[in-house]
Length: 509
Image (tube, rainbow, N blue to C red; front, side, top):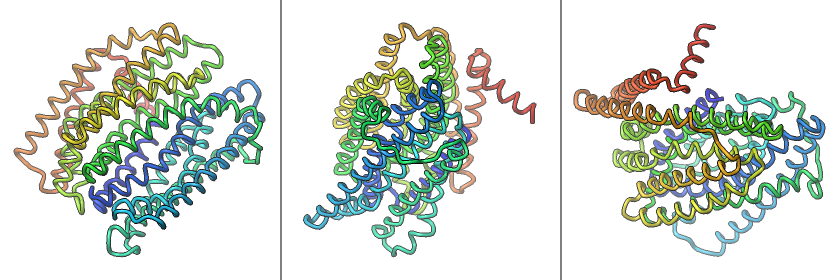
């Protein structure tokens, strides 16, 4: 699953590189980013967030206790309800946008954002269905194909920039609508990619009336607390983006590029582990196997810490050469590199907390508890909004990054405290023993990466693409070797396990 996620994330990074060259980080890029945030808000409310978190444990329970026939029937009822609710929301929003644009004159950047939103908003329906399909496949033990599905989205989006946008005129505010249409096509393609595997596994969609359906009612009851928490998160993101958009239009796009870089390691390890753990922990919770539940959760967190601590260190230390290599071309200038670098340096330290929060939230969902993460999320999001409001004017992109990093750490601490109360104990003593050697390894790796980059810049510079590649990979590889050697020498279990796994695979080949 991590391999498939890495493939899609690399393609996603290629997509962001194409975006950066095409539209830079100016007001048009800010308008597109803002417009795309809004269908994403509803996608996470009705799709991959609260709905799947509430539905997948029930889906798994149906499979174990009532058999496949009832499992598929429950899935069809939930899908039918999703189609109705999403279609109603889309119709209302499209009507409201059309009326607003017809009756009120807006500033150029606001009007462009609203027009882009009107094109992209229907993306909500196919991407919500995609999230349900992926959750069903995960619950049935399929992880590679669902994780690879995002590659379809990235391929379509890249194609829309390279081959469709030139036919939409010569000016960027006109060409940007090619990306908006590409979003719609990409959503459909991503959902269609999941269907063949689902159909081979026994799924066949049939209309099931959602009104009065027992499973739908249970899903709705469970998803409302999670939806409130996710709504608070997305509304928080939206408010901070709007606030940033008016402080300086560059903030929205440059911070978004930093977020995309964070999503590469977060997706490969954090989201992969969280996605795998939800059905695994749900099955253990359904069978009341709580020692195994705690062991599986601890194992997942240990693997996550080992992998993402190095990633966070490299993102902080090598932020500038990474952004220069990936984005600095076309409309993305050297000044844009400095802005995105500042955002990434402030955001990347929160990678560990971001990823671990995803795993811990899945543990609550597997236990049928969506209220506790929601309450904690709302508290932390209020804190995030307050810190962002204080820091965005003096620190711009960096203020948003610092706010996210601090509040994610608070979120992590509160979730651990609440989960320990819920399970009586977490049995994390073995995990705590590895924190000191991991921190020492990360510090040593960071120093090696910093000195390696400084030496490269002083002696070779970054005038060519090959020198830019070397400025990233030479110090990163040296730092990675130091990190692995130290963690293996200190007998860190996750390092030893991953090393043994890699060795076994190579021997078999």
